[in-house]
Image (cartoon, rainbow, N blue to C red):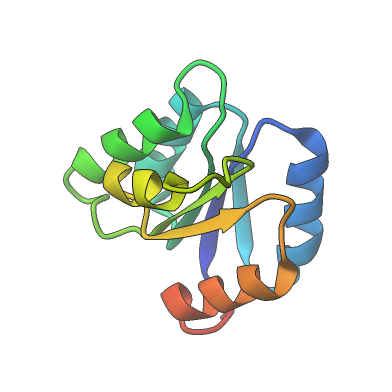
Length: 122
């Protein structure tokens, strides 16, 4: 079963993601960027869903640090953000994100991205 790290500090958003994904993926979670980096190193997930507005270390910096670490650079990171202004997707990609999803989350787009980067659930 593929493992996804969800880095999200909003409990409602986290609960929604867990409900959508728990049947098909092994999930690990973090509620701030610093813990997200640590858990990425420990768990070596197949994909990371990264909120960009996080406490301690924001998602932009957490993404840069994960992508700079040997052994983690290959892990696809999808930005989850309410920052849906013009240029925000480019900013996320410049930070190292491989994909971008605006909030509120479109479930169909989420599963399209997961399929693209993971090639199916299991």
